[in-house]
Length: 584
Image (cartoon, rainbow, N blue to C red):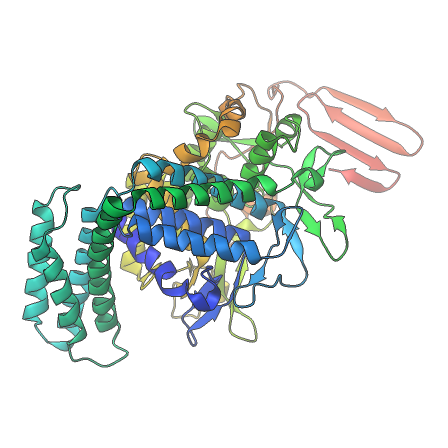
């Protein structure tokens, strides 16, 4: 999984450039021609910042290099127009203007605020530990990927490449003998320089992918060694200056997070966060986030912790549940891995809690659903195999039938590899096996795994079983890196978020236990009969009261001249106003 994350970090190394003001472009699409989407969002920015932190944790980047990245990103963020402290939903990365229509998204603001808190605490942590902890392992990752590219180049061209193979083998051997914290030897640094030169000197066509990859990974190896040396020099000569820069980054990140006013996004009557605010219309969106199993969970926790929203808001979030296996899991809108697990990049789910059990059971259900269809698992919102007039992939939310309220979830089968990374925080071995299956199908690309694999029959030709969506989206790339970092580093990103005093004061909200008794009913009939979905046995919708399934139902009927309501003891109800059905 380290190598999958390292390939994914290459996306940000390649596309976060001064031309885009050191902010991550939204996506890169390979076909029909390479195209970069020069726009970004608060979620893209937040996940890029976390990815930069993870790159330093993994040893792929030095402390000074990471500080420079973070300073450049926060410097660009200061130039972005804001409203009530919130960043708008979309910005052009080249001119830093908010894209029309200017809109503030509650979930985007919550994501960025939480990620900025992680950044603030990471920088404070690095003041006491200024040298990246895993430089040797970071170099090992680059060596292995370089050797992989060299082997592929040899197979393709028939060229044996003895010098580069020998150099990479010697570097690998020396790294195996070097303690993780040891200073790199001059010999090792010289070998990395020599390997980079040898890769550039290999004769090959200019567009040969393996040759390009070999040059990139040998350059990355050399740069990692150079950045490690730079950190050592900085520690010896200018430790106080580095500490001051880290403290300034921490202060700026925390200030940006706390400047966001969530009170004006709160619908006091419904006690819920609105989906967002339209600057053009000068009004809140009438729709609200009303489920606990939602990507907006982080925004809700942050708003409560900050004091912008009353605690009762948390308990107004819907907790409808479905029985899965021997337990019950919260239901989401679209049954996607994104809704369930994205908040867990920085939020903990205490063992035995409702959230922890939901995450575990949902990952299991995703796995069994994929197995029933004979495909890799991991269904979540993503781009899919449909394009507009400009040949840009379209985007939608996908999920497992029975896990979501949205109708028609069985009509599409789109597997998103980033969902496997999110699931790695719950089931690492299962994720590793699924990554192997995805690789066998051809889902691995230059910048990590491709955006999605579309198995939907109606979007495939007769000769195809799957269509790979050949694009990379910044926020999915960031989720992949951060989720794998949490998996391999013991949840370090979550630890940094929960180190914040105001988050510690609100952590009791996450400790909610699973209710013992739930009422159940059957799922929507259209989900079971979908031509693309497998039979889902034993799945029942659940509410929150005890269920007397073996006895005749107890009903209460209330009526006036214009309005009638029928209520069952299980919580099921029907109401109508004259001939208009209000609920069913």
